[in-house]
Image 1: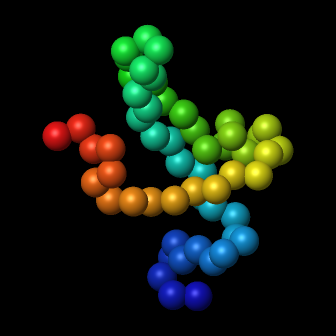
Image 2: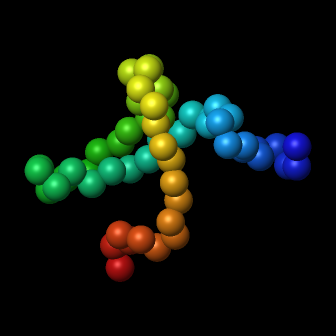
Length: 55
């Protein structure tokens, strides 16, 4: 394993939090990955730089 944070397909992602935008309220919020994980549902994470970025 290279580096301290290398991930593999099917591996367990570390906990993290993200700022979110809530279109229904027009406000911002926060979500933690641990909350999603506790629901016990399959989760797909992807990263696409600059997509939907507020500029």
